[in-house]
Image (cartoon, rainbow, N blue to C red; front, side, top):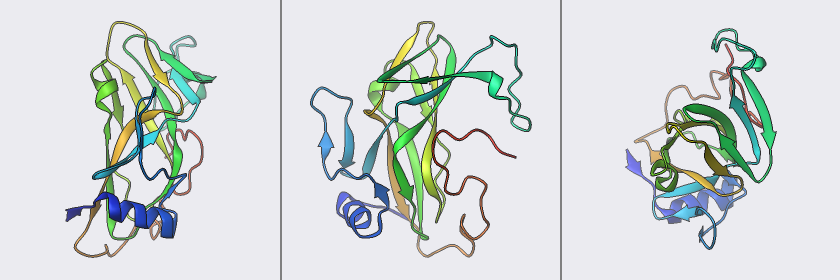
Length: 184
């Protein structure tokens, strides 16, 4: 398995729509950086957020998820309460090739502020907006900026395609758009 360089990411984005919209350089001036990097792609967070709250005393249950567990916010930034959590999504829509697995790491700018971004691997032939889990591990409110970089995706090319891809097994998050809640 090899990590794929900027030239491969650019070629795949331009020829197959692997990443849309795609920026073939790093945008950095006055923003948390996003766009193509040496061995990855820094994605942006869209301006739609679902912030977890305990106002209605809901229980977070992945088998019976209630939308009473969060409040929705849209705008140029989102403030996540102390020791809390928000769901968001990438601006970019991804289409993963059959012989590729994608992993995601949070950007160091946010990590150094105590905010952790979690995303499960993007499996072969998965496509959609990536739902982002953003945790504020600090005892203070923390701000996230929409339409700026939030995480980096690394593309790992397998020695060959898998026997069964995410699309083949009709994965439950295939083609998701917007912030997607847990499904059973």
